[in-house]
Length: 66
Image: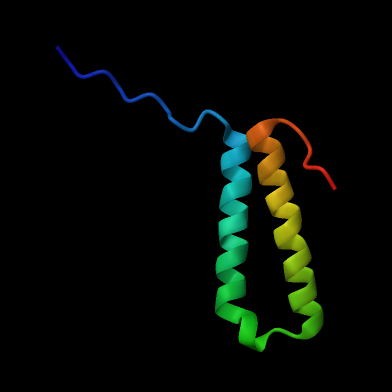
């Protein structure tokens, strides 16, 4: 009897993709933060907030309150 293949645990692919993007962005900021201009830091923060909102939306199916 052969073992059953493991089922894919990540059934919410859009959530996984946004989480991956959030991690990549956070790592990029951690690497470059000392070299970034104030404008780049501001944009990076805005993008982090947007990605966090997208994670929330994909995880819960609702938009976060503003």
